[in-house]
Structure formats: structure tokens, C-alpha cells
Image (cartoon, rainbow, N blue to C red; front, top):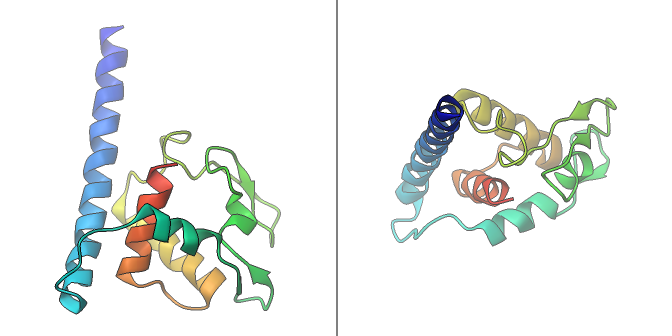
Length: 133
């Protein structure tokens, strides 16, 4: 029982440290452009996540098109039909555990939905929204 609790605590601390590292790097980028920046906002992140755009394949999509609105449940890639495991780290402990992976998927998904890489502010807001789901 003790080992299980310790394992859960280590995983939680690892997740927290990874997310903190990622958000801190984004914060430094935002501060360069906006010295009065106060912090990332889950509400702005939700608006970004749910807003629809003409994506890279010319189809109107949003992040919810593949991930759904309940990020604690699996989604499905609308182009490939592949199952996407829950995005919420509360439901999927594999999420947000590696900065390089977070950066890769943020870049790819912003390009798919917005036809561009997201700004540091957008990525920070979306990350803040996701980790609170």
C-alpha cells in the first residue's frame, strides 16, 4: 500500500514539474512581447479549444472535433478514425509528462486546426484549460 501511494506521489510531482516547466517557458516568451502579462487563463484556453476554424484540410474543425468536449473521455481523429486517448491528465496519466511531447502535439494540433503554430499565449491558455479538465 505504501509503495502505491509513493508511486502516485512521484507521478503527480513529475506531472506537476513537467507542466510547470512547459508553462514557465511559455510565460517567458509571452513576457518578451507583453511585460504586463499576468498569467494564463483557462477560460481563454477553452475559447481557443472550442472555436471553429477552416483547418489544414479545408474542413471546419475545432480541437473538440477530435478530442470531444469531455476531455476525460477518449476522442476520435476525424480524418483517420484513430482513437485518441483522453486528453485530460486527470483521466490519462500519460498526458503532459514530457515537454518535448507537449510541444510536438501543440504545434501539430494548432497547425491542423488553425493552419499555423499557436502563440505562446494561446498554447499556455490551452494547456491551462486542459490540465484543469
